Image (cartoon, rainbow, N blue to C red; front, top):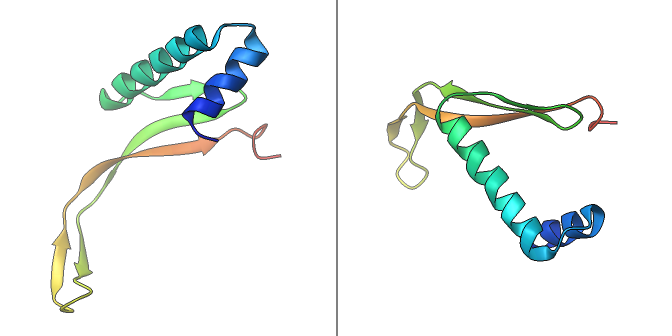
Length: 87
């Protein structure tokens, strides 16, 4: 399912117009991105939890040359589904 399909389903299930459903989805995405970038956790009961974690620097290999390289540490988003979602 892509964003347009999600907007259509949200509009259908909520009784909103597609324009209003798109605005609501865009607002959620914006608020979620801002919270994640600030290091906050987002917990949606019945869906799951979004959080950030730091992936430490590690050694890797360049597949073309085989030379060892250092892969930099970075912050990544993690999703843990709720038990309701995994049934």
